[in-house]
Image (cartoon, rainbow, N blue to C red; front, side, top):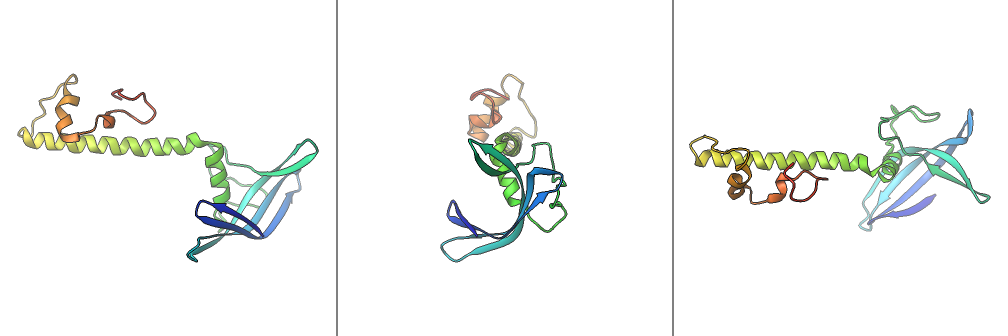
Length: 166
């Protein structure tokens, strides 16, 4: 049993089974029951697995979780099949840590969609005030919509320089 902390949750891994890869002694698959529980007694329990890779540093051997590459979906690996009922939570968490740009891209896309929605809602309110006509030019649309949007930041995409009209 392995116990760790993840924010306000305690994480427990039970029934750990490590299956070596018969083709490569530096790879293995770990299968276990993952339990997350908080101090209020709430517990979530599910089967999970992770791909492990052996690393040796200064005569010490470590087994490290191998994250998926950003372009990989769920992949086939000895002892792990993405169609199993296992969640892959540990591998997804390792992937987010190893490749933060993958999760930031999804966040940026969501934030950009939200910004565009707010701009469109502001444009709709503008049109209601101006008899369903758009009297804006590329040079003055930002200033024309500001009374309806109230946030200059909506015109800048996540990741762009602040103040840039994206």
